[in-house]
Image 1 (cartoon, one colour):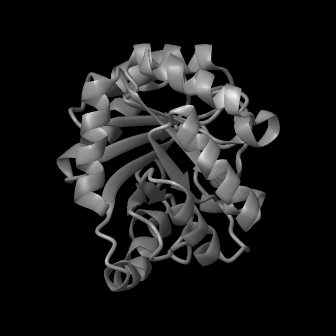
Image 2: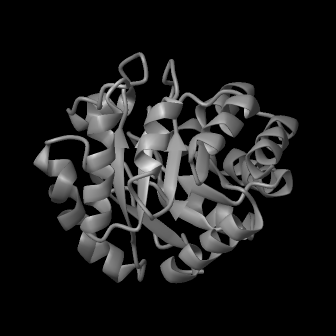
Length: 248
């Protein structure tokens, strides 16, 4: 399943359900066997896709991605922190541009370095406007990118950023409070962004309960991402509750 078919699949999910559920697997947080077992549980719980990646990576990504592909039929979508976080053992890649910041390395620099490898791996990317939103504490992605997040009380700033992403030809927008964020992206900001764009909207970071996930969907999120909460409190039942709340 390559990029175009993954996007078609996402559209099918949105038509079938109210919204979709992505589970983020951070290669730094689990070894190969643990990641493979988690992938099986993610699929059985009713999630719609697996995002693979993180802000910092020291583990070998190839065997982890290969194990995920062997254990699940769900799309494996790379969610890279930089140009080195690539593997051919995936179905698609979020080709992220950090449009909320002004660090040129994450606007275009890492993308240029990654491009030849994405071509070599035959991964047609999904261009994604990535926006950091203030989450109540400093997160890993904020530190690693050297950029400041958009203040959580400034939806009037977030909306035009997302619209610019769509006008630049990006196919998705991702509002990110950050892994381990104290607070998720505010409902008001989600609604403001969704009202300005026609492309799918992903929301992640700080979403700790199925109730909060459902609230973000109601505010306008098309896809919800959880990761850190599952690493700390992960269980099949919790993932199933998230899937049910998001799909309701």
